[in-house]
Image (cartoon, rainbow, N blue to C red; front, side, top):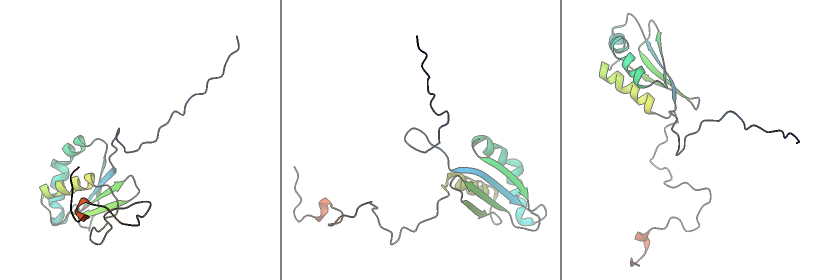
Length: 143
């Protein structure tokens, strides 16, 4: 009996969003604050009292606390597409800081595109007559 060589499949898979899986786009959240500035007092309160609960609710996100003396507090989100987003926290209450951190985690990291003046339908091939709608006919009929 001759032995046959078996080929193994590739043992790694590349993650992608689709109908079978969801990958959050946020990788890391960095909270930066000053130990002495009064504008950082709410950020310090959020970090000491609420951040552990938020981190437990989102185990896929790395949370980093960084002390930046002489600067206003900020929250910085790093995303899978290589972009980052910065939100200042200096005029926010503790609940507002939590909402802004949640905003960073819900965001995709993509550039914000204005909807005004934007094309409503994007296609790989342009249509000669435009988009058809039942409202464009003179007398609508029902089949």
